[in-house]
Length: 349
Image (cartoon, rainbow, N blue to C red; front, side, top):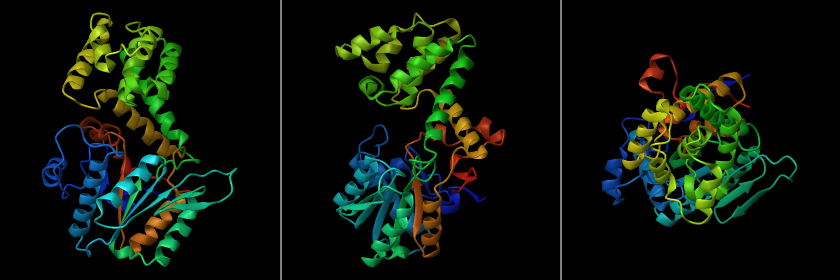
């Protein structure tokens, strides 16, 4: 049984949601903003054109740092429409040709690899080999190609295989931190609220931000918020969002939750997109546990291809939409021996 780490393919050329590469020699986001003309504010997300600008610049910087020839092509391997959009945005930037692979294991569907322009969609992860062979036929030079690999539900927990373990880890981290703050927590109530708030119809309120989801579920579970009243406000367009919910519940939270509530308000006011730090640390712990015990695995087809292309000179780097707090241990966690996500061994299958 083979065990490996993401870093076996990428070293520390790994980028989490804050777009600050783990490799310290690569440029920081503020430097890239200045060079690329990207406005200040929260880090761009994968669906934004500015994200593609940052990623492209980091690819060029990483290639130069290893003394390799200038890049002649970019590739994106992922599992979602945001990955497809990233490949499209890289093409829009126009500096280099950009190719994409969007994969998922769909065992009840026929094996297909369908190309739409320069991006292919596959119903099996092992069709990565076919995809790479077709790019070779078109003349791609791997020694001057960047292979940008999505982490969540692609390399780690590939969609259609062990991807459910990623969601389970997040849910476990949510419950773990909730019971830590409220020892007598109404667990069924918290779970119902958490599951409900994860639905797409709540995205206008939660902004699809798990920090907001978990904190709101916690406020509901202690009676500071009423789920049905909040639903009515959201449906009527009368909600002031998560910041508004924090403002209205300031006098309603139990004494034991007051410090957390104040921390959340301060972080949100400062524009921090990851205000619930304790939750994200708990999510990291739950994720690493699943990597250690085999519930969360690395995609064998992708790992093997990455090794093969590494040997041929390709630049392998990885990106994740996880906040850094869910992927990089705190000083306290480091002291306890906790590893960064990309350096945690997992089974390759």
